[in-house]
Structure formats: structure tokens, C-alpha cells
Amino acid sequence: MLPDSLSIAIVEDDPVMGESLNQGLELEGCRVSWWRTGAEALAGLRAAAAPDVVICDIRLPDMSGEDVFRRLAADAASPPFLFMTAYGEIDQAVALIRAGGGDYVTKPFVFNDLLARARALAGRRPPANGGILGVSPAMRRVEAMIARVAARSSPVLLTGETGAGKEVCARLLHGLGSDATQPFIAVNCAAIPHALLESEMFGHEKGAFTGALARHAGYAERARRGTLFLDEVAELPLALQAKLLRLLDERRFARVGGETAVPFEARIVCATHRDLSEEVAAGRFRQDLYYRINVVAIEVPPLRDRPADIVLLLNQFFAEIAPHSNTALHGFSSLTEEAALAYPWPGNVRELRNRVERAATLALGEWLMPSDLFPEAARASDDEAPRGLAAARDAAERREIERALRDSGGHVGEAAKRLGIARTTLWERMRRLSIRSR
Ligand SMILES: Nc1ncnc2c1ncn2[C@@H]1O[C@H](COP(=O)(O)OP(=O)(O)OP(=O)(O)O)[C@@H](O)[C@H]1O
Image 1 (tube, rainbow, N blue to C red):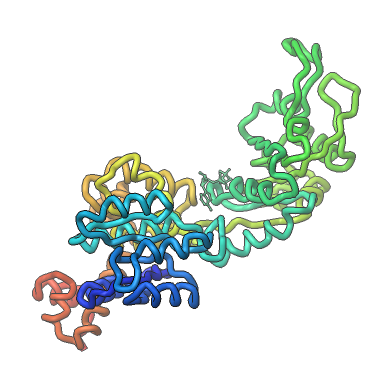
Image 2 (cartoon, rainbow, N blue to C red):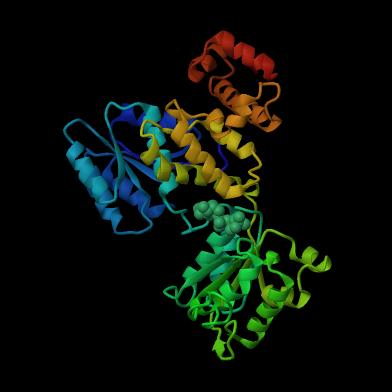
């Protein structure tokens, strides 16, 4: 089971259909609530924490699935609905989707299709606590910190590995600040040639240097009363570090080639993947500037340290990307999710997004397999495959087999049936993984 298993509510009066969905979803590791009538569902949904997805029959004994959805729809925190319709009810289901209902399947449906749609819906939904950056405790803490400091004007320093989401955090800080309509100006200090940095940052007057044909407003001026985001701040040359310090101390600056003092009204947010104290010790970064920009420090944790976000982001990016690239795709196989959890993600969220995009574009099957997400590992022979991937596969197999054995009271034949594999195959896997039947 995944660390943050899906919580699903079924609204279905048919005992056979309800029971089979209940069992199927529980076998997939979901937490399931099952309500038989619309009234039960409304009471249940209002009383308990909202599930990630509601799978709802359109025909119920006391009201329609549409009524259930519409009575909850006004609440912004209401979960997405996946409707089960019969032929002839598709028009109604489509109308509900347009009204924000989520998705639908037509009976009879393939269970895996239903599950994939439920997972995609859950991925699209903002996390239950209103979280924007993720569902992991670590990112919730980052988000809470951002919310606390957003209304203040003090400088913020965001640290963390490349691709972890420092710019996303800076944008959130800006968005939650006192006036989000003001500009957010992002400057990648590593990408601008040193010779141009000063005039780009502070602007220049007409005639300040050859080619300065008109007055030019720099980033500091264009940020107005918004946010000036200095990404890769450790790469600023020492001469410019001195000017940035003056800007922060005096809250004013002069354009290159000019005398007039221009007020600086923006908030400064800096980011770096380097350890700035080491840069200071090595003489590459001014200590006084370090103290000045480090008033509030927020560390964005690497993706490998927040497994709940890995699964969330996989599904979120899949829901965004797949409809545009490969409509036959259902989602990630559970082995792929396990492999993603075991992978160290050196390029963090940026790498995850790129891998999902590539996999969704090139995958041949209906489910994204580990080899779609990690083609380089698939190219190596099994023996050379990264230990993490093989170990993840074994761990997933072990869990499924042990669960099937437990549920079937240790009977190998029954467990094989539940797993959908031959009894001899199960014996062979159990021998390889040293699992005993009782
Ligand atoms: N919490 C998140 N939710 C959704 N997308 C995210 C999240 N964090 C990062 N991303 C996406 O990952 C990519 C990299 O994020 P971002 O540019 O913020 O990282 P960074 O830490 O600033 O990277 P760098 O150090 O290389 O500048 C972007 O496409 C961004 O939209």
C-alpha cells in the first residue's frame, strides 16, 4: 500500500456491485466507505473528513446521484465525483461533468479503468488541508511558514536542491502577500552575463554606455511594490553583491550613468541551491549581505524526503499531461509508483515532471510501467538494474503476496486466484522471496 492511500466513498444501493467495488478497492489498498442511499451519503460526507473521491451511482433509491452531488457542490472543499451511469444516462453524466462533477464510467465497466479515473481525479484535487505545495508534512510546514511571513516585508532566503520548488515557493509568497497584483520579477543571476548584470538589475540612463539609446528600467525598478526574486543569488559577482547590500540598506538606487535616486519598494526574495555559509567561508559571498538576505530562511526539502508528494505529483502531472498526449493511458501501475518512491530524484520535481511527460508521450501500453518512467534502468540488464528499482519491485510483490496469503488464510491456491496468477508461479515467487505460506 502507498504511504498516503486513497480514501474513497462508494454510493451504491446494489449489494452485489457495492460489495465487489468495496472489495476491489480495498485490495488496491484504498480506504473505503460504502453508503447505500443518497441520504446516508449526504450525512456521511458531512459528518466525516471528506474522502479523496466519491464513486456514485446515478440511480439511488431515495434521490439521484446528481442530487447528492449538487447538494454538496456549493462547498469548495467537496470531493470530486466519479459517476457510474447506465447506457442512456450519458447525457446526464456529461452535464454533471460540465457542472464540475469530475468524471464518469458507463456500466458495465472495467474495474481498472474505474480505479485509474478515481486516481486521476484524486490527483487533480487540491490536498484536503488546502495545501498548495504538497501533502507531505514537510511541505505543509513550508507552506505554513510562507503564509506566516507573506504579509511582512522582510527578505526571505529559500534554500534547497535544484528543481525542488524554490521558485514555486517564491511565487506563493508573492501571491499570499499584501498586494499580489504588483509585479513578480524573477531574475536568474547565473544566466545573465556579468557585464550586463548591473544595467539589467538597476537599469541605465540614455547614453550611459555605447548602445544605451534610451533610458531603461531595470528589474529593481520594474518590481515596483511587488517581489524581486533573485534566483541563484550565490552566483552574483562580488561587485554586484556590494550594490545589492546598499539597495537593501538604503532602499534606493541609481540607474547606471545616472545620479537620481530611485526608491526601491519591492520585497527581496533570494534563492540558492548552495550552502551560503560555505560560500561566505570561502570568500565568495559577502557575510554582511548573507545576514541581510537571511532574515527569514526557508528550506525546501528534496523530493526524495517527501514520498507522499511523489505520488501526488505523479498523478497531478499525469492528469495534466496525459489527455494531451496519449488518451489510451490509464495511469501508473503500482510497481511504477513503488519504483518512483525508491528513486532518489536528484533533479527533484522538475525531473519528475519531465519523466512523466516523456513517459506519457512514448508509452505503448495502457499503464505506465517502471520502464516507461525509468527507461535507462530498463536498458541495463536485470543484473545491472539499480538496486533501488529491483528492491522496490520485490517489496511490492512481497506485500501483495503476503496480503493475499493472509486474506485466504494461508491457502496458496486461493491466494494465487486472488492474485490472478498460476499456483506454480506463486510457489516460485514465494521461494524466491523466502515467503512461507503460514
Ligand atoms: N509543489 C509543486 N507543485 C507543482 N509543481 C511544482 C512544485 N514544486 C516544483 N514544481 C515544478 O517543478 C519545476 C521546478 O520548480 P522550481 O523552478 O520552483 O524549482 P527551483 O528549486 O526554483 O529550481 P532551480 O534551483 O533549478 O531554480 C517547475 O516546473 C515547477 O512548476
